Each structure stands twice: as structure tokens, then as C-alpha cells.
Amino acid sequence: MLFPGYGMGAEMVRAYPVASANIASAIAEGVGMTFKTPLEDGVAKVQIGSTASTDTFAGVTYFQYRVLPTKLVKIDEGKVPATSTYTYTLSRVPLAAATELRVVVTSALGVSTVLAYHASVVNSTQFTISGSTITVDSSFAGYSIKATYAYTPSAFEARDFYGDVRPGISNTSNMGIINVIQKGTIVTSNFNPASDWADSNPVRLDTAGTFTKAGSTAIVPNCIVKEAPSANKPFLTLELR
Image (tube, rainbow, N blue to C red; front, side, top):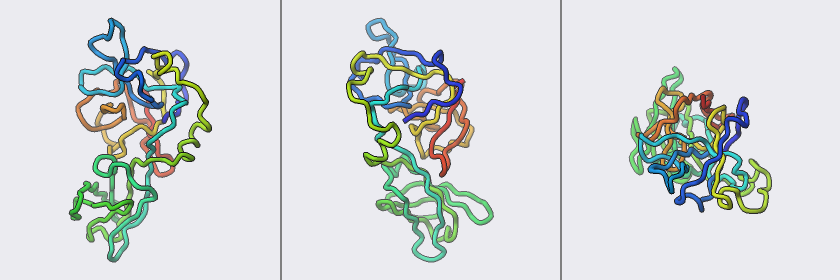
């Protein structure tokens, strides 16, 4: 899901044919695309995401208003109880706790610790989760806790972003062409919530076309994080320069 930002003009959007492997896909807005190599039928076509660092960034999908979002990001903040049990219940059930849930606990002195997911063991570096309930180590009693994670929106929540989806066939599946933003500011929910968006690592694309700070796939060139996600604004703001 994508909100084009200020400064994104029509001259910054281009259209490309879609690679045959993705032509039947329901490609949502905000998906990072790369150019397929070698050329397919001698034509420069775009594909979803990146599988290698040598992939060339093509742009971010735009005007895909007939595809409702199936994944959104939420940030919950609260306190770890001062006495047992040391749990915190999220407002939604995370989609993928092992890979798309970032948990940070912070002491009263402002010292933060990033905890890693573990299926069964809780200690000073790990947390567990059951359903929507996170359990942390007793050493974090009374600490602040912040959880950033992806979840599946309800039909009503998904519809809230675009209103009722217009009927008909999307241009992508009908014509085999997709619009991509190559320059400008975008605000998107299509990012890995487990990444630290305040760090200095480059912005990359994963195999699903999701923005991430991890891995060794294609770097999005000339891209800066203008605003990291927050509880009040759980979206990632990127500037493509």
C-alpha cells in the first residue's frame, strides 16, 4: 500500500511491460520492482522484488488501486509489568513473528535492548510469543516495550485505504504493463517491520519487493529514509532521489 508524497510529478512515473512470471500476479501498490535479465523477448520488462545484488531497481508500483492491501504494519507501545508475569499483549496477532516482529525494551534511564524471537526460550536477549502475547525476561520488569510488526487487516480495514475497489480488470493483468515511481517521496506500508529504519544500512528489496535493511539483494539507489515508522504513523517514508 502506497501514498505518493509531495514532489512526485507525472514525469517521475514510467510504465514498463511485466515479466511473464508476474503477469498474472495481483501486484499491489508500493511493491519494489527490478528489471528482468536477460531481456525477455528482447524487451526490458520488470519483475517483483530482487534475488541478487546485481539486480537493477526499476521503481515502485503505482496506481494499482484495484488490489487491496493484505498486509499492514502496526506499532504498539506499553510497559512490561513490574511483577510476574512479564508479558505484553499486542493489539493484533503478528503475521510472522520470527521474521517480521521487532521488539525493543527500554529502561527508565533510556537504555534500549533489541530482543530476538525464540520459539520457547526467554532470557536477557530473547522473547517468546503466543498468539498476540509477548513474554520477556524478568530482568525487564517495569521497562517500556515497543513492538513493530505486520498483521493481516480485516476486509473493512483494507477497504479504508482505497474505499470500495473499482470494478473491472486491472491494467496490469489486462495490458501486461505496470506504472512505477522512480523519483519522489513515497509513504508506504510495504516494509519489513523487523528492520531498524533509523540505522545507516542501505535500503534494499527482498524477493517479494518489500523494502528491508537486511540481506544481500538489490540496493535501492539514491534512496534515503525521510521518516522512520512510529506509533502515530506506522508507515515508512522514503525519498527516491
